[in-house]
Image (cartoon, rainbow, N blue to C red; front, side):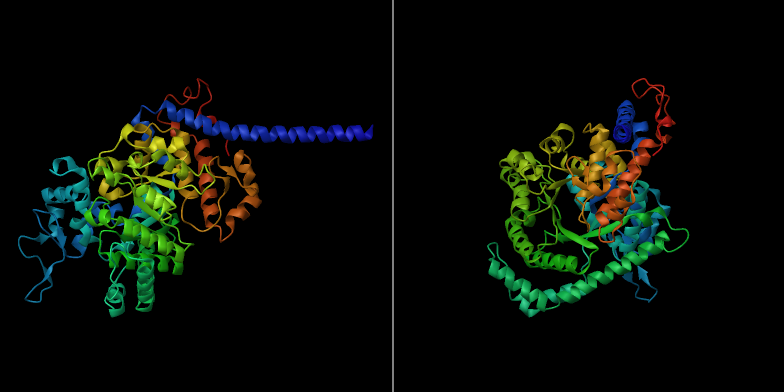
Length: 557
């Protein structure tokens, strides 16, 4: 009898515990579901949608060119501080000329001091338009040409301003509720160019059909003729830039700005439009730098994919990458591929860039991937990228604003839904938010309005941005497709409090990925429980299936 009583008591406790677990899981699901319902209820109201999306956690931005991330207004101010000159007819910025009388720098006609723009509204607005995509339709150029021409116009303003650029993009990321960035830039200086000038390096010429033996010999020559100096120079540049960034954001003071909390890591960007030897030398430097400095988490290849050299040398670039991946197998790669549209290049130019970037160069991520449906065996390629065959998935960085203004690809023309339906992981990114006059919240808005993505889709994008980030550590998810948590953090399936076991797992100093992912999950818990999103809408109390309970009365996490 006693044993029966004990068993009955044990069974009651077990049932209570199981019921409590189910209740917690239902609560967690209901919070996400109710948030999704509210999102659907305001989908046709861009103003309320903007309020919602500004507050929504967004994880990371994995496709962000540092020079293109800066707004023209900042660069005009820097041009003034650096006493630079601007051509009032082309809006190209350049350094001033030393005055013959020794009175400092001066501007020789037709150039005028850049600071003139601060008191000349016509010049000011014209410079902003010329340095960005604002009103590009009035420029007389295609979106593609206007976009890529901006960099040559404002480039002088970025010289020596890497630190302020990091500060600006970190501040903006924090305002968008991002917690991580992978920023592309190219830290090369005098040691790099000295290395290229070495006789042993110059004597090895690369041709279209360069063999593995030639690539091996050139890498050896680079390593033996100053590569270590080029690496140390890049590290020093980055140290100085981060010091400047932290000073501008007050990170070491009691008044530190929110941007200080954004984790910034770097992708070395290789300039694929340069001569073969320089492209290869930048690749080797990129891999060596990533081996030497954990802040550089990988590399990418940039410059317009449709230009002559990137198109002509593409097969060679892929073979270069294939060889170097064999020498540096631990360094991940994201490649711009398929940032093309019908008519921009001959049809055969649309057939293989994504395939070769994945299958030959071994890219872990693809930037843009817009022309995927023109690729040979496109559906098979996407199946392979999805990881459904047991291979590692290849994520696609989706840049909707950029694809629209540069390529004219939007709405149903964009392959985003084909990627998603096939199971290819995707994450929204800004690309060049300063030049495009955008930010991450407006990328999410475009995804909701133009691509009709749901709240769940957007949440998946945010999670994917950290899952596929090139950052040290293991994942919070045992299954990233379903976001099934690792056993140490099983409570993430429910509304139960996060345990010490989970915090220890994510708090390990070597597991930075899981730490960021856990921070994102805590942000989502707070976001999906907080009432502020409904304050501007009378629909709050009726948006959730007519229930009198609004999001304002949801249980607290």
